[in-house]
Length: 373
Image (spheres, rainbow, N blue to C red):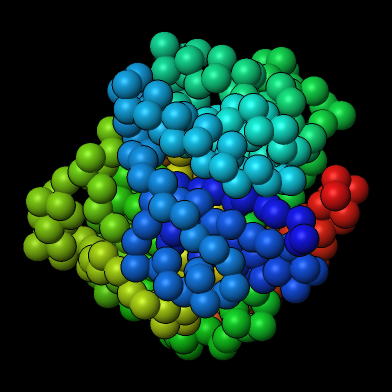
């Protein structure tokens, strides 16, 4: 009988887009892989990889105790029925409720803390509750993997995990073949450069600061273009209303696309990818993809984001929540020569090859699983 691994994340789309290389590697090594998530259009593609899919509906932002008890009960029933050898958890609720259920089923547990989101931005009741739940859920974990050193140190300092049970991974990595080095699109010295933001439309992602910064830049370089790419989520506490984004578009500050089938098509057209987030990021995948394509990055000197950029070499770091400082960094990039911008992009690609190759993640997981099986 094949050793069974249950891998859980919020949505099927997340599992496919972030964990596909790990899932494929585990299947190739002879493991039985059971994927657990809220179902969406990506279920068929997950099953085509060779894993079995079990739907488990949840709302990732809900803090309603009864709804969360239902999610916990669903996980308990699933774990007792499946009896996996190993449970791999990603995102908050699978990490917490999936781990508690896996412990009851006697499974070994590997957790992946891929950013802390809005829950840890403020010292309030929600942050204290999530800290307590994490402490309970991760107490029996064989390994807790983090995407950046800041989150790792916070969990150890808060006595949520023991330092010897932790590890560090470069996010979910990037496919360096699929995201290959591409020439810069613009050969102009200054005007008409295209900046791109990729991510959910959340205030905490620094979208307002980006729009304000672009407005300032356009006073000097009117042909500057800024594109926003990502879904609106008005149910999220930090969600930006669609009407607000439409107003920015009507003012000529930005253009907006909610979705593209292949993010490479938009990144290749951009001169620079901008991500002014002060959300507790893990290691933003959009920035890893941008670096792999040879696109310079401007992002905040904040948790997770700063790990992707060598300031002045592969891009620029700006102050969080500071539209004026962000505007200065945009201007500094615009006023580089085409050769300097290309050199910055190539340096980002070299960093991606050294540090962010998804095969690093695959090797780490396979080695860790081999010690547990």
